[in-house]
Amino acid sequence: MKKSASALREEANVLRLLYLLVSKKIPFLEALPLAANTFTAFKNPLLKILADIKDAGYDVRESFLGQKEYFSPFTADILGDGTNAGAVDEALRKAVIILDMRARLTETDCDETVINSITFFHMLASLLHIGIPLLSALTTAGKVYLPTNVTDDIFNVVCHGGMLTDGFRKYPQHFTPIDCSFMEIGEMCGSMPDMSMNLAIIKERLLLRRATKPSLPTPDVGALDIMVEYKHLATLVNVGLPLMRSFTIMSETTPSPRRQTVFKTLNKKVENGATLSEAMESIPTDFPGYIVELIHRAERSGDVDGTLTAIADHLQWELLGIEPADTPVLV
Image (tube, rainbow, N blue to C red):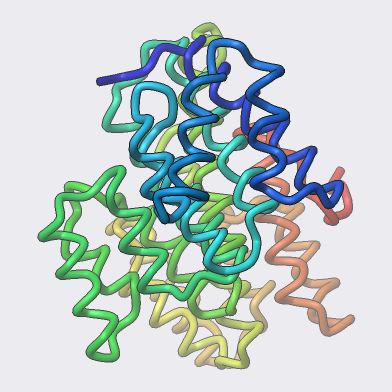
């Protein structure tokens, strides 16, 4: 049953207090009765969880699942995995973040499937951040969004040497091209937790923008694709691939026929001796003057990948209002 926004916030507040207590070195089992005495509506379920762990020998996941009227199944899963990894404090914090996100989106009457999609990427990122192995994180996160057979199939793809993104691309009804592009970047540069979290934040921001600020223009898919393309290209350059090989990969992975042509044109120009900025300058409809100038300067300073990333962050800020963490403002 779908929980209301207020119920999600109540659950989040309980976990928020537990996080505070545990982060200040109070053992989890001692924190439970303290929280029970603070939140009267949760007193009985919290004390029952304590008894199940101490007296009945249940693990944390089983104990929280037994109180499903009060705690979401994904809360039980995150806390269970976090406890097993010795990171119950971080697991509590991650669960609060997800509950707060679901409360915000629930208030806007967003489709439950879309909320579950965002939850999936949040959970995947959170579990990886606390040290859960990829396949275990996939199995746990998949419970909130994917049919079991889909999770099992993606699991098998990875087990047999494929990338996680290879598995995602088999199910376009569940994973958009932008989803796949973000996760592919994460896999290629070893930052899958961060890219998964970034993707979840972007998806949430888009939904909230549509729901709460309908007068603002919604970024079109093409603009978002271009933002992702800059991130993708930066990753390929950063890992040492030659420009022409990078353009070939980009032309093969972008879903837009027009953008495929753009990357093939760039490839041809560079093959014939042009620099990247010169190749971009030859297609002014796709590469504004400020981008050409930035790339030209980056070529001289040797920071092409960093500049491509900065351009992607700038577009993300412009389109979605998500401020770059450590990126200089591009004026």
